[in-house]
Length: 90
Image (cartoon, rainbow, N blue to C red; front, side):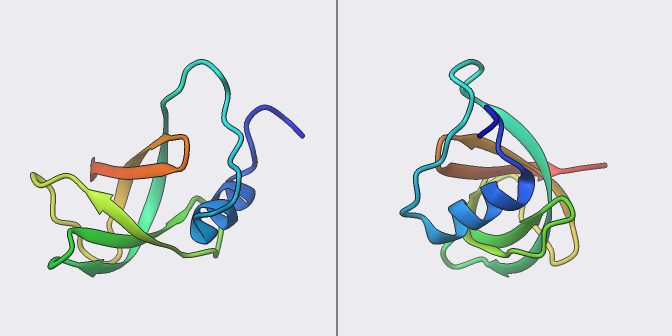
């Protein structure tokens, strides 16, 4: 298995939340682009798909300064199995 998993493999693992995710030992933070597919403002979470993957990753937290909208292209920081939407790609 390569050090950096494919986008689809990563998305599938994140969507299961209990799977072991292998990320490179350094850097520990990886930034990727994603598309917002659903938003829950009450819980400050959204669902995203990474790159060309069709796998929806639910329950991704987002930063308070950015409230995503469905269809937004956003930046997601991955630190192990904890994705965090940090803002919109402009």
